[in-house]
Image (spheres, rainbow, N blue to C red):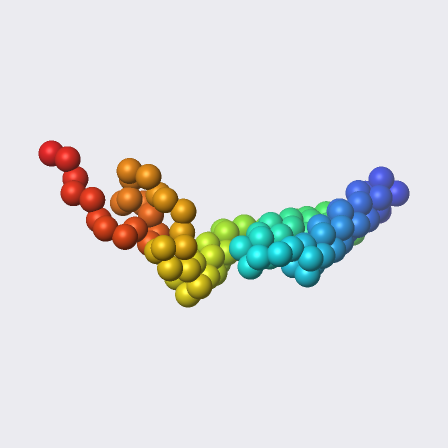
Length: 123
């Protein structure tokens, strides 16, 4: 393996570690639960993605074949992390908020999470 590939793999691992650190720091330091949810889901997804890309490059350069396991893990991670974050956010909203404490949703209450009254559709 050439030093260029070793530097590239090490760069991906260092960048992944920085993303993981920033996500962990945001989880500890941010004020409300919705902000705490945002920091680790975005940052650690990129962190784990970087580690998997480094693993793909290492297997390609040292063993001479492309490992598809890491690609499947990356695809699964990138598809499920936003959905999981959305579900956790919805649970937080429904458990800790009341319709009176939420901001006004405007005229389009069909898309609101906790609309007070459903509006009749115009014909």
